View 1: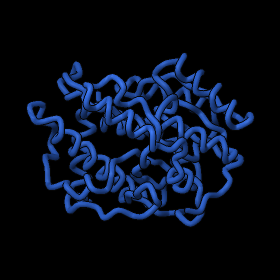
View 2: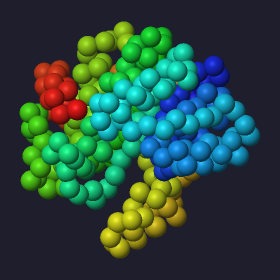
View 3: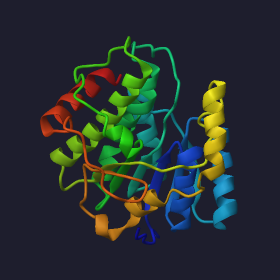
View 4: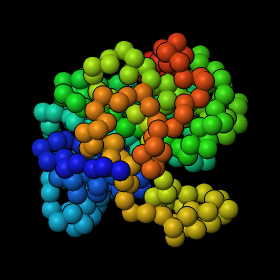
Length: 278
């Protein structure tokens, strides 16, 4: 995968204080970008900045505290970003969870809210900054291509809170793909928006889960990598200018999208997302 220097560019990484996000933030700083770590915790954000400084030998790295899980929170975060930087070349949204239960105050299953709706809120709120920065890009974390192949037609008018956790996770992936498709369709001259599979990256995502999942996490971390090369490629490569509405695997190869990803379905999912995002 080809990777270009990013000197003079500004990159914001949501979820950048740990796991995939931290690996991405390290890579952006290594490539010379001004890197802004977005974290829900000020302490975790600062620890990430200190760690990145230690590994990259300096560079312009900073953190912003914010929570885009609500419309108000996302708008406040967008304001904070605009006050901090006059341009946004790349947004990388990496937040995610496994095994969440319960519902939000609006009745949305938390697994859906964390793994999809927060990405929608964040991207919608910073879209004006991306639109005003020529050649800007947005990247949303996805899943392994094997799981994408299992996606079938599903509901586009809402989320069934009684459905299984596995079905909800599948719906979040489908809607991320639809989100990228919609923005690619309505603003072909605007920022490119793509979904990526990060590959096996060292993470504590499963550390608080039940024993079987904790064991999976521990074993996975033995083989996991510290860098997310595919994001370095997708965020920087000149060869990807104008490529939007796609998904890429951890080797930078384009993933075939499921039949549900059509322009009509993408518009329907966006409309429903607007209604759900409060």
